Amino acid sequence: MDLDITKQLLVQAMREEVAHPPGGLNMCPEPADDADRPLDEKSLKKFQRKASKKIPRDVAGIEDNPELKPYKILVASPQELEKFSAEPLKSMIPEWEGVSVRPERAIEYEKFRPEMRLGNEPVDPLVVQGTDERRRYNDRRYPWGCICRVVTSAGVGSGILIGPRHVLTASHVVNWSVPGGVNGSVEVHRAGASVRATSRINRVFAFTQVTGSGVPWSQLDEDYAVLELDDNLGNRYGWLGTRTYSSGWDGDAFWYNVGHPGDVGNTRWPTWQRSKWLDEHAWDFGSGRSMDTDADLNPGNSGGPMFAWWSDGPYVVAVVSAHSVSSGENYCAGGRDLPRLVRWAQSS
Image 1 (cartoon, rainbow, N blue to C red):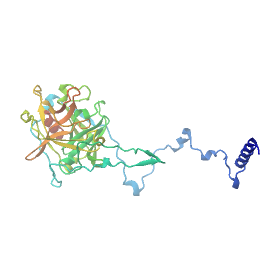
Image 2 (cartoon, rainbow, N blue to C red; image 1 turned 180 degrees about the vertical axis):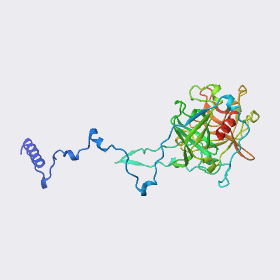
Image 3 (cartoon, one colour; image 1 turned 120 degrees about the horizontal axis):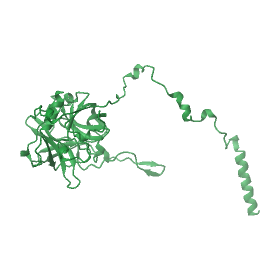
Image 4 (spheres, one colour; image 1 turned 90 degrees about the vertical axis):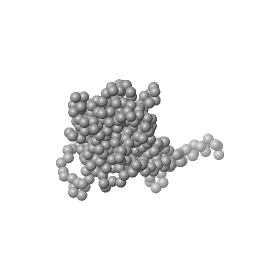
């Protein structure tokens, strides 16, 4: 048989099989009815309604988190702040909490990397992979369990409980873009996906509103704020004391730091370091003081405390503030205004 004739017969047979498939199957289905089509945007209006019925009892206890309201801003003038004593404010160590001078190391969950495939093709899972080179920890004992992760629309920073419902952080962690204040919350001891407690920021106490861009010396040495929370989390977990830094301690490597740096677990794991020094600037004569430190600090550490232990407990003397791109130095903020600001917030 001629090759061209054979090809023609095969093509004709295939066409007849498609037109009349075995078993009566329809290989060319008719378009779907309108009832089977997804709705267009205009038709979706019928679903819109206001809540009117009561929540059933069996699910009524499952409440959504309340919507965050804007916090109130209170800024003190130098004259107002001088009314408050700069004497040390004592820490509160709960009798029901364990105490440890070193935190337990966190299990390195981020080293787990699941293998995923799409068919036979390997693909990357959508999880954040940590690159931890510092000492992450997961320890809820005092004082390590007092670490706070401050979340505002400006970003994420660090903080520490320093009162019944008070958290010390950096002023530039607060979003000052709106005069009346924006919203924010505080997470106590976030370790990975685990959070010890969360509370809304109710009020913010500050001496200087530091915007975080082009911060001059006059602002850097006053880069701290106190956040007042809705809940008395300090009464539950305890808090650290605050006191004025003394230049007589310059160069002494007995300072601790905790924080939530962005380059370690994407701010979701607390880190700690010890045996760090502080060095107060000799030309800074005001009641707010800036100081250098050899602590390893990165974005996310801002607002974290520099503290040490005294005979009656740990005291914070400064908060992490800024980093110099030109010199490579890290800076903290402290001075007499630090305990004054805390005392004002606690008494208001």
